[in-house]
Image (cartoon, rainbow, N blue to C red; front, side, top):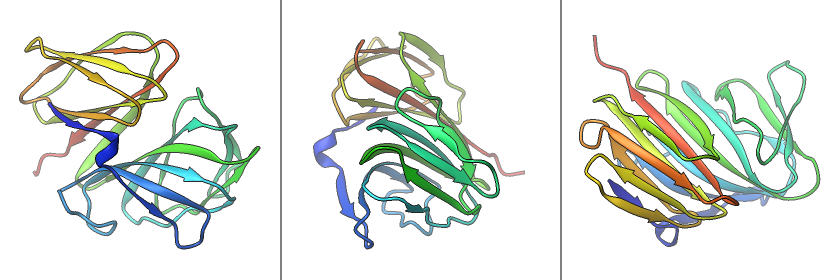
Length: 196
């Protein structure tokens, strides 16, 4: 299990002044926005606007703070996304834009290169267990509170606001997640596509 503490994550302001992004992890290590296999970040969003285009990338978005936003994906009707609602997945190369409902929000963004990985993002509100396959990766993010983790090695770890834990199915295999009652905890499951 690898722990990433919030204090070690780098925040970068957007060029357009509409917000900032905090990268939690990107793989492979040192990858840029052009060549990552997968990437998890949070963003503080202060203004309406279009999303950047990411060809070949699948994205999932969750609102973790604020009053939420209206998300328009391609030619579809806008969808409301707020804290506590299910995350929304969409293709990074489909034109997408957001309109804030009532001021600044914070979101969680998961991106995978579809030729290499697929992912699922889920909000964990009750204690949960997860079995990992050999080539799977799990990332647990603790937001707005604390989370306790246990693995099949009986390792117990505490995550606090903004912290993340990365687990490999080949090493840990089993994961138990216990979120704080008032907090937000998210589980990202990443599955690597095997070469054929």
